[in-house]
Image 1 (cartoon, rainbow, N blue to C red):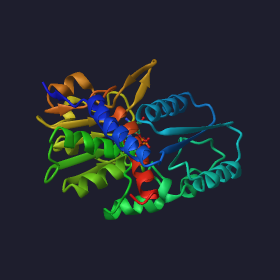
Image 2 (cartoon, rainbow, N blue to C red):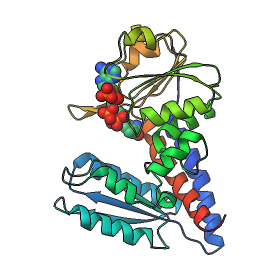
Image 3 (tube, rainbow, N blue to C red):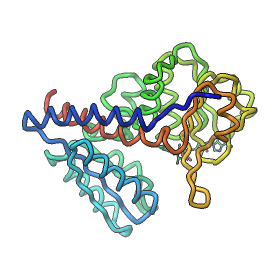
Amino acid sequence: MSRILDGKAVAASVKEKVGAGVAELKEEGISVGLAVILVGDDPASKIYVENKKKACEAVGIKSFQYVLDKSTSEGELLSLISDLNGEKSVNGILCQLPLPEHIDEQKVIAAISPEKDVDAFNISNVGRIMIGNFDFLPCTPAGIIEILDNYNIDIEGKNCVVIGRSNIVGKPMAMLLMHRNGTVTVCHSKTKNLAEITSKADILVSSVGKANFVTADMVKEGAVVIDVGMNRVGGKLYGDVCFDEVANKASYITPVPGGVGPMTISMLMKNTLTAAKRQNGR
Ligand code: NAP
């Protein structure tokens, strides 16, 4: 039976450190602020935004919420972002994705000033991640590295397989594992013989978005299995991994909920503190 990687506990310790950092800045008269923009009324997005607000409150970051009607035009959204780019009390700006279809997501991401881009989705931050010279890392992959570090799981020289190649999870995950000297393979929907590849992984990260996708026969005995998936089936949350059968084979595994999910928000808090420090010459 594998050991559970307790993302909730690791996230709590990250938040505690962020809280201390925010308090230190406050003593110097510097407050830390995060602007969160939500366009439309997607129920999952509403929950994520609410959770971000609560996390801000818990660590002493001031949160500025902008809830815009789904009919908001691209121009109006870009104008709000431009205002927030110039607003000194706002250190980080996050626009909750997905956006309504009439708004070009890439245009919006590009409009956020790189210094305030705490999601690290802006092309200049993505480029900096590529060359390994970064202030911010995308929250979910950074949270996964934090979990691995916390449990002293060495990445160097390991066969790392990432399933999924999205810009927000799969690609940056592969990059971060590579920076840590892992030997990385990225799989996607066109990959042939997926199980053959995944069953050679010492560290397997699944970010597919399909419940019960990773079965025990796809996993190497003793592998570390990281489940990024958040799949709602009949109102219940499932990861990508068939937890019970894979847990019997893996050495370590993240549960869903309580694994990668809590890390994402705590890394957002960490990025916001970093942004505030940089903007104040710290
Ligand atoms: P996404 O953009 O839909 O990407 C899914 C990836 O899976 C794509 O690269 C796709 O390949 C690949 N894929 C789909 N079917 C496959 C198959 N049969 N075999 C191999 N690969 C396959 O999703 P995402 O935004 O990366 O998110 C993935 C999951 O993580 C979702 O459940 C999401 O809710 C969750 N998530 C969780 C957190 C968290 O904080 N825990 C954060 C972000 C996302 P193609 O590129 O070929 O289409």
